[in-house]
Amino acid sequence: MKKLTILLLCMAVLLSGCAGTAAPTDQPTAEPAVTEHADTTETETDAEPDAAEPADTTEAEPQADVWDTLEAAYVYAFPLVLMDATKTVATNTEEPVTGKAPVNQFIHGAALANAQFKNVVTPNVDTIYSQVWYDLSEEPIVYVLPETDRFCKVQVLDAWTNTAAVLDKAGTYAITLSTWDGELPAGVTRVDVPTSMAWSITRTVLSGEEDLPNVYAIQAQMQLLPLSAYLSGGAYQPPKGSNREENNFVPVNKVLSMDPVTFFQTANALMEKNQPAEADAPLLEQLAAVNVGPGMTFDASVLTGDVQEVWTQMLQNLRQKLAGSAMQFSNQLGQWSYFGAPIGDFGTEYAYRALVALAGLGANTVDVALYPKTAVDADGEPLTGEKSYILHFESLPPVLDGGFWSVTAYGEDDFLIDNPLDRYCVNDRSGLSVNEDGSVDVLVSKTAPEDTTNWLPVADGGFHLYLRIYTPDMDAIESWTAPVVTAID
Image 1 (tube, rainbow, N blue to C red):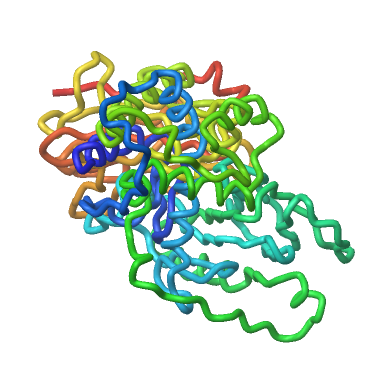
Image 2: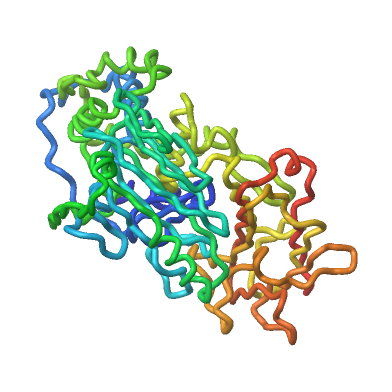
């Protein structure tokens, strides 16, 4: 199982450009996103939960149809189980601390990543995150989003990793379980989420370290409280959470190490509180054959053959299947590529949903952000610090009002590259020099030029670039010429 975990984590790193963010750290990654994906540091674990005893089928050959159904069930339920594990870790604290907060309380990011930041791969250096893990089973939670002078959007995700809403205007919102039938006061906008577990990621853009106090001021004006407390109008003191040592784990490792009985029992229990979508009904009919679904009790007797061997082999083969199926959603943008719709709102594309969950929880929909990546130059040669390059923008990335863009360099280890300027990206806030024809040239090199205005530092060894485009003009993107990376020596 350890070997399997390493293989799948390697895939997560390779695909970390497809997602928007993952879990409980100051800097979600996989925007990639991952990410903007944000998980705790991905370290290996040898621990595996004790498996319930399956039926004695030592001599039996695996039944392909049963294991095919179990594989489909695993792909379907994986994002839900991973979301729950991530929530467990992120809320494992008595009061808010760096990277954690109790349920229904803010986890405010406080700093931008730098070359010393190793918590997550491909960290974003454009935005500061404010996260919340919700329990909507009792009542709605009111989120007050203040007026800002910048990009500040709240992505609300359901328990299945789908984007339920994006809040992009100041106002008072009630994050509400869809089945709740109460009334809201005037001036409060209802935001329906189909599951009792939910997650919001607020991304607030900033222009470097000197802009941090302005972001802190915005965070201080955000409010979060239960509807009952909002209606009472009095001071609200959120309750303390709890801290249990056994809940300090790496979420993806925890889920990947589950035996089949533990995994499917967990999934069934979660589905009771986080109901599947209506569109899932045909698949759930099939999964009922192996007792996977809300309200069901998974029966170990359906497991046939050498269970551990077949389970491990199934997951190892699944890695290739998921990666292969995701390629149909890969879009080319010149020499760059990115994962497109229906990312962030997956519908019945269960394999795509599982892959993106593994690569980086919290993926934005394409209307909110695109994350094109390139690791080669215009000749198809791998990017390396042994050469210098011109990153040429014929025109800048097309964004709608309030949108922004950036290009960030990462080393072969997927972390930011140390450099004397502590500069890790160039963006629309960098004050870049513009050519007479309106184009922009950025020098990508390990050696600093005399004028560093348009310099993006790299170092020895291979590297790759992410072009993040927030609130892209999707109509204009189709005819836009993406920047070209050309070696100059």
